[in-house]
Length: 322
Image 1 (cartoon, helix red, strand yellow):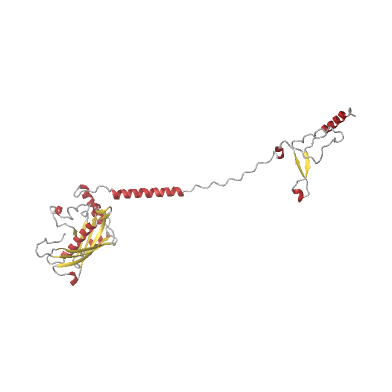
Image 2: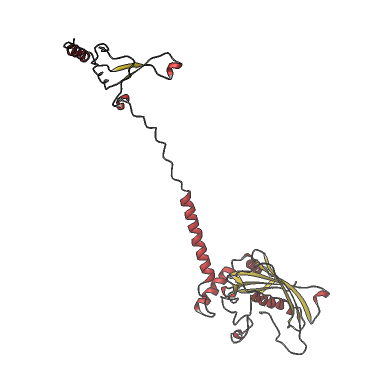
């Protein structure tokens, strides 16, 4: 009996080797078997390992147990090597680049350049021509040409009711330097560039078209209030003297109300009218009202003055051309 055991064990081992390899195992899915009575079959590329030899003849079997689950060495075989790669989703169309940042940048650049140039001209304007210099005479000629295109100047010039002359034309060249408005304030940079006076002998009204130059600014670009008071005083006096018997007078009272700022390098209109009736005064004193306007009719300054003929000292008689 002891001599035959090795022969039977060899035959059993030989019969196991002659069996075809098992490439599939049938098993019941532990979860789906509860709801579905189906069997699933999984294929493996790696065959199960051979069963160990049982040297006990009584328990030796030629086939492996159907209840044993093979232990697989490589789990990569469970996945199909020929699986198709996922199809990439179609690329979304490229969005057009917005021009809004470029537009905003250009707009802010333009605003910055314009503001910078304006501030530079206001805070540091170019040099103004000196009175009686060639550049001043050229500027004065240009101002007269521009003033001749003003509609108010054209209408008053063509109306025979209105007399007109250039301001201060009665003063000689020797007298001009000694007067405020023809000396320090002379030239195109101040009030000497253009000032035309229109007089209505019927109503006693005066209208003056005056150019306020760039040197008259108290604040950059804004005409000094004292300069406006000087212009209004002289314009109101021109109107009042025509109503006085002596043909001359001095300022006794002057009041002004500044409504809007007046800018430099611009034409303005000065209107003066004598106060009619007893309130206007008599032969030795006269009240006059006036206002400073833009060419569009916007009132910048309102003024009222009282002018009297002096008794104790003699003044110069003011004639036409003042």
